[in-house]
Amino acid sequence: MGRIKLPDTFLGMKRDDSAPEVAMMRRQTGAVTEGDPNKHVLVTSYKGGSFGENHVLVVAVESDVPFSEEDRADAQADMNDGSTQVPGMKVTHGEVKDADPGPLGGVMKCKVVITKIDKSDAVAGDVFNAPTCAWLDGNTYVTFSDGSGSTGLDLAKTADHARQFRAQAETRR
Image 1 (spheres, helix red, strand yellow):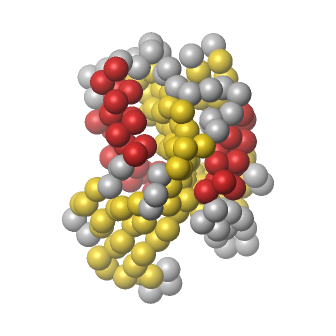
Image 2 (tube, one colour):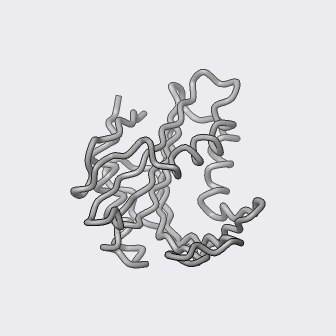
Image 3 (cartoon, one colour):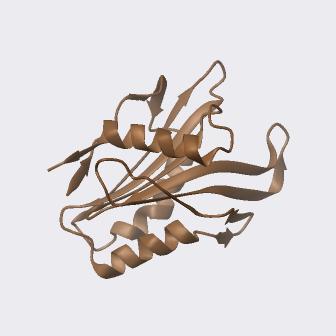
């Protein structure tokens, strides 16, 4: 079983626990741990570049005990779909691809997540594409969205960054 310890830096980017997207994701994932003292959600972002244009968002769920079959099925469903529509925003994705999870094992899948915002941002527009990989093992489920700019929409590069992050952040216990 694994344990996640979020590093202070990743690929030269600094950890930013106070970013608005971190607070939003904490609210959205809070239901995952509700009523289960064994589950813990960790959310952070990493930012770098001259204007913060390089960024990674990490959402991790770890459990003190192995995930139940229902938990695993829910995580697998999220890895294979994860589409949602909430007021003001619609999230879809491109083709889901299997990826090598690295030496810690488990399952890794990658996709480009497409977020359409109803109200356009004057700078960034109203559609955001983020190459995203997620891995699942006995007691950790982590989603890694790579907006670092260095991968473009290349899922193989994103999977490589996810494996590098996993090697830095996850340890066996």
